[in-house]
Image (cartoon, rainbow, N blue to C red; front, top):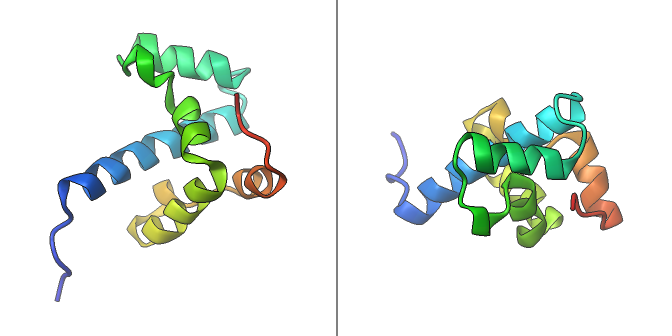
Length: 98
């Protein structure tokens, strides 16, 4: 049996988490040189709201330890939701992206 349908808040959380994790992969893979460059590309390229500041700014506001916890909670949904080792280290060291 499949569990209950996710509510609006969880759907938004899942969507944002997948975007943030893809941004983190792009940064770690060298696709973007800096977190600020990556966030600007998301704001100007896909239209994230300017006040949001980008995916990595959102990650910093959320808190990287909380982001890692969100990844753990949603890891069953697939690789797009799994925290990278570098993210886990950054969270443990208290080093935000921006």
